[in-house]
View 1 (tube, rainbow, N blue to C red):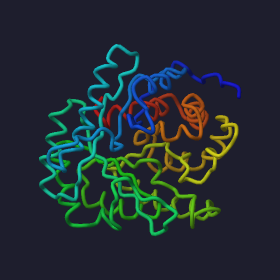
View 2: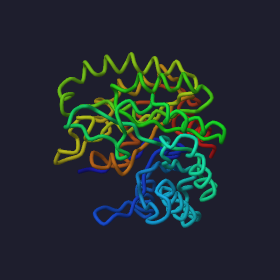
View 3: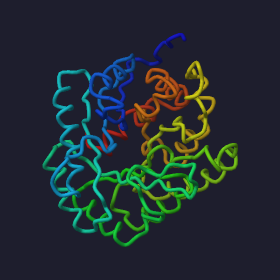
View 4: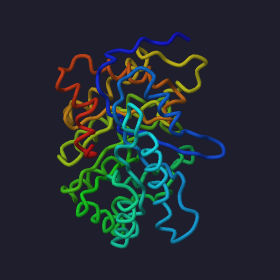
Length: 320
């Protein structure tokens, strides 16, 4: 496998979506991240997004996720001498189904790190047994429940954003939530999770047509911004992770370009940010190749638009 030359190596990048974990079966910690961010692209800062890592093992159950913020903050401190501001923003987990009581958890995250910026409470749910629901084990229709919305209401008062991870059939649910809370910044993760496995396999054109309409309706909510990435996970159905040789940036761009350009068209560059979703997307391609594909997809945009999508939008949303 040949290593691609890095395109536009000087372009500043804020990677607004990656994970860190240290588990018996899998590790992706500071050295692993810096090996990726240091592989050729000019990644000047990153944002960590929750992944149920290093929770506290004792104390009240609702406060145990604060351990993840403490874990990541320590990594950010250890990385302060690196060229990349690692975890300059931290998106943590709090169970918004706790209603108003979740405020105690949000305040504990804020006390644990000055880098704390928002919450992700994953809502991915599908009726098919072939689609794994989100790690937070959400019930069907969670975003519309009274308890969840009472908890969600605690975010705006603290200036916190909400990262939304769900599957494409659920996009109308997110649109309804965004309309109900126009004062809360909502970040759409991974294009809204277009599925390509189980009952969705082989239906990409049909799914794209449905998604195209749903994402435009969501984009009409001015409080929503979009992360552009996380589209080559196994759940998306491209099958890149099954290949003997990983795809080139040309292959990635050719396969996914329509999704990117549609999102940019409806949200506008100043509400879009490219993301790596590493190490999850690492099963399909390298960090170097992935960001090359983004640069190829964005090649027709002007400099100000590119700068917005590669760093400025993320820096504004996550206050970096």
